[in-house]
Length: 151
Image 1 (cartoon, rainbow, N blue to C red):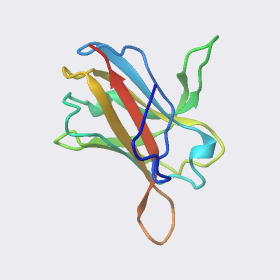
Image 2 (spheres, helix red, strand yellow; image 1 turned 180 degrees about the vertical axis):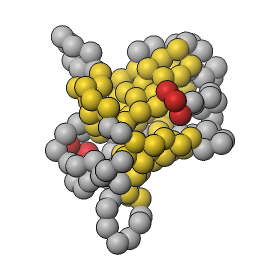
Image 3 (cartoon, one colour; image 1 turned 135 degrees about the vertical axis):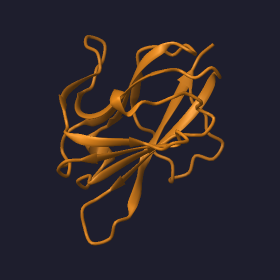
C-alpha cells in the first residue's frame, strides 16, 4: 500500500520489479518505462537515486533494454539490450545512460540493475529524467519508482 500526503500532479508513479526485497541480498532491479510514460524519444536517461540508498552500483551491471512486462504467468525481463554507455556518479546519486541512438517511443523500455540491497530498510524514491533530441538539452521528469527494502 502506498500513501502520499500531497497527491500532487507533479508525481507520476512508475512500475518496477525487483527479485529480492530483503536488505543486503543480491537483487535484480527492473525499472520500467511503459509507452504511456514517455511521449518523445530518449537521447539520455538519468535515474536519480537518493543519498540514503547506500550501496555500490557498478556500471558493468547496469543496462538499458527493451522490456517484457511480467504478470501472473511470466516474469519481467529484458528482451533485447539497447546499446548504450552507462555512467554512475562517484557518490552514487545518479545513473546516466547514453543510448547509441535515440530510443524511439512506442515500446516498453527499462533499466536493469544488478546490485546488493542497502543495509537500511525503508522506501527509496528513484526519479527518471529524460533528455529528448532537439535544440535545447534539458532533461524532463518522467516519473518515480518507489523502491521498498524489507528487513
